[in-house]
Amino acid sequence: MVRIELTLEVARAPEDVFAFLIDVDRLPEWQASALESHADAQLAVGTRIRERRRLMGRELDNELEVVAYDPPRRLTLKALGGPVRFTVDHRLEEQAGSTLLHVVAEGQAGGLMKFAEPMIARTAEEEFHKDFDRLKEMLETG
Image 1 (cartoon, rainbow, N blue to C red):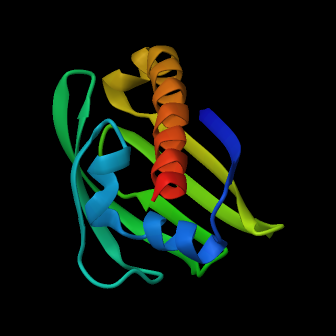
Image 2 (cartoon, rainbow, N blue to C red):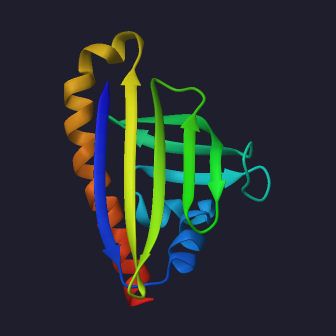
């Protein structure tokens, strides 16, 4: 099991940060591995998101489900397929006009990917931090 946690302060209101997080069509703008992403409806609990990513030199299609949706405080996504089962929980908290964004990603590789889990974990953690730094920069520079 891999667990990645981060907390960052974004100099924007939680409503602005949340609106950016749920704009899944823009995911490729701030997540390095994302090639495309589309929701089947407006986000709510049960909404499905189809995405295509490049991982370890391969393009993979995946489907996610929104399992928690509480604007502008919480968004949790769960992978329904793919070589790595994971969840990503985003919690937002207002702090003096800014937002504290707490993100926890947990995942477990299956099949042959299980053997590569330590390498996947290192790569994922590095990319995860860079992605959220990019999100922060995009929100703060507007």
